Image (cartoon, one colour):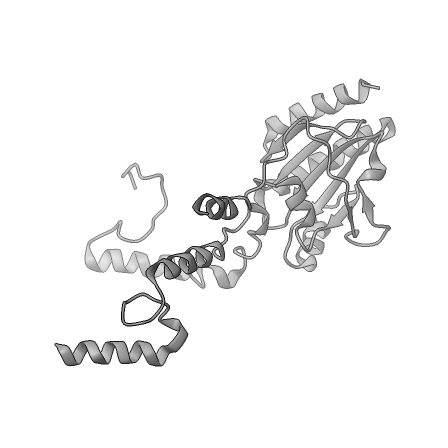
Length: 96
Length: 160
């Protein structure tokens, strides 16, 4: 147990500045890590409505080919005698 | 200190540009050929500032309507400025080959115009009166928008 802790801290020390006070073993305080986390959160920006062109690119789609994905899903449903696990059309009324 | 930090985090969310606010005065390069679009130079005209993109489905509906409104009301002092929000200008050009419009179109590559107008939806349209004051904001576009827009343009054109 003792050995494990030593190794864990050792790894963190080798990571150097990446530790940043998440444990007492490293020098910086937890408060500093909180501030750093807050600053990192600032870097996460939401996509504005007018920037959705970036999301509309074909390589941003979940599936390469919607037709192929639908065929696979249909086959899977038939083979497994189950449907509804994957995303299907409809408004959640349970009628399809 | 904590309050200041919170303010710093949330201050990036600008207030939306609503009716009653002055139209931001900015200049943007033209999409295609022509002189840059200067919004400040349009004072004295009723202006509809539209934000559109080829990937935006309701924009396909709005463009022919806006073009017909432009053709009908431009002799009375109405104009449309269409800010394109495509990532690639080529996408916009391809769209315009299918949907041709005659009103001035502008590029907004660095989002300066979209940020100045604080666009909340696509398409967004800002109807500005002759004094340069935003009078009506349309977010999204349906057939009802088209009908009310025509009425609003007519009313604003009657104002001095």
